[in-house]
Length: 89
Image (tube, rainbow, N blue to C red; front, side, top):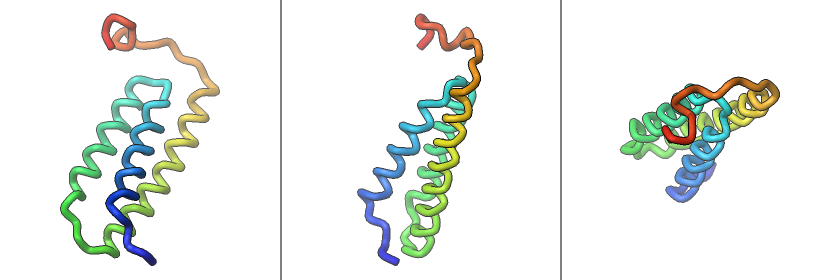
């Protein structure tokens, strides 16, 4: 397996953040964004290529999960929270 390049990891990070912003619910959106940032920040100093490859594969699986959950969430409507009103964003 080829080692993951920095550019590939950054593309994956941006894809995760972009997809998490599609959650219709504010709480899901904020939780996913916070969790993604924390996970990448926690693992930024890892040098072992096998460990990096395992983390990249886990992130790709999580991206697929987020995509599925966003799709399911869009099937059901919910009222916006007060914090999501135009004056508060």
